[in-house]
Amino acid sequence: MSSTLNNETKPRTPAYDPEWRLIAGRCREAWQEIGDREREVLEEAMNHVMMDPKIPARDKILLRMRTEAEGDYRRERYNCSAYTPPTISFPQNWSKLHRYGQIAMRCLNTMTALYVLDDRQRSPYIHARDIETWFWRQCFGPYTTDIELGRSFVQIFALKYDTSISKGSDIRPDDLIPLHCDICEQSERRKEVVYSRKTSNSPPSMSGPLRGPPWPYPRRGSEHCGYTYVQPLFRALFVVLVYPKEQLPCPKDIRWVAQAQAQLILTGITDGLSAPICFDEIREYSVGNSYAPGSQTITTTLDIATKFILRLEQREVAAFGVQPDIRSLSLTTPYLLEYRKKAKRLGWVEERDGSLDELSPASSDWVNRTLFPKWLGRGALETMSRTLDLINQKWEKPEQYTKDWWWNHEDLPKSSNMHDVSSFGPSNIPTLDQIVGGLPEAQLFDSNSQDQSESQLPQVKSLKRKASDEDEQGRVAFRSDQIKTNLPYRPQKGH
Image 1 (tube, rainbow, N blue to C red):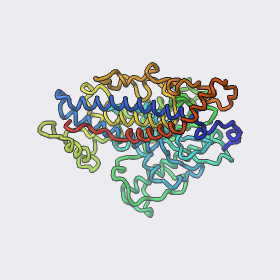
Image 2 (tube, rainbow, N blue to C red):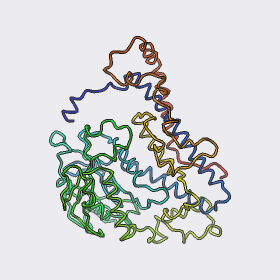
Image 3 (cartoon, rainbow, N blue to C red):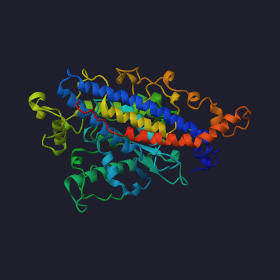
Image 4 (cartoon, helix red, strand yellow):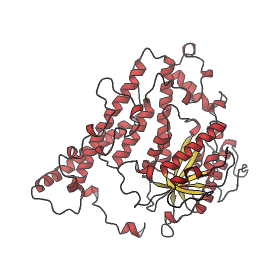
């Protein structure tokens, strides 16, 4: 850890601060109520469409299949990048705990990589929850995003390095390009070994040379990895986020991610791209003098970097289509048989609903947006739950958030039996004074304040006596809420 961080004035430890613990417990209770009400709206809306006799059974089944696939996909992406992102040692490119297979699989069918350089070197890297949640909201489209074959926009990696030798801001692009290229080649090599069932004595052909020691080969692997590969865009471009404490001081919500400074870096590999990549179109958004015409790097905000890569992805899809294209696979492929089995389990009758052989294997083709204009089901529930978990983890105060605290309000359903509880604006979120019963915020958070009036002291002492019991109740309620938010959506019996 840097000397700067060691010399900082440390705040009071929350665990020994009764006032802080009281506020944390009250905030958890407030967010639990908000989450419960939002969840009720989503479940009520889903049950309503499942019971609607005017909606064909085929469309109901396809909606169920897509939304449940979205829920699984959201949980998978969270586990891949958010809670504990894969850690890679720099400059050796040595996976922490030797999780080579995990890294290799997460590079396949992914558009880009984000390497986080954090001098605090925390493990697990919980700050990636903010980043991953923000990425999800920018890159995922309800019902429309292609989610099959592990396709994703970004994979987050945390770099492990010796801060006594160099800081994250000192690591140069020329040092990171070989590391990224080596990860690409190692991932492709490992995938080919798994798919072809070859041994380490018979290495497969690769697109380029290794730049580090070969990773161990597995003897078994996922069957569908043979249909995936390292995308040309993933090889050509990656993002670096240097995470200095002075740049990101105790963010109030995940909106800090958009304005975080990030560096886009080209590797020089253009094989498989429809056209070369140039940063000229975003040069006006560069930070300082970070870009010169023809340069391989540019420093900008993560928001601009993300939009730039999304446009590149759209360019490649327009030129070649979604690759690999699940629609081109044989219907007898084991990976594609599962959704047909699931349709039958949900009540698909071919005489009524049509032949499953004619149903597109891409779930982005399934949902009728005319019948279902709002986002429903497990994908929405899982997204809301992950955002709620993040907020609770950071002890955020509800009044700092708007009605769009987890998704665009216009895309979400409204309750038919109660007031619009999916609209949580500042007017119907409890304020801090309401949460803590009128105790001044400065008194609760300023550990150096010594000028409290005598009239305030009895109230403070009273709160201290209650803090332990109330905080314990808050923790129990929070744990129960976490359990509930992780439960998948289940329609009521008979629907």
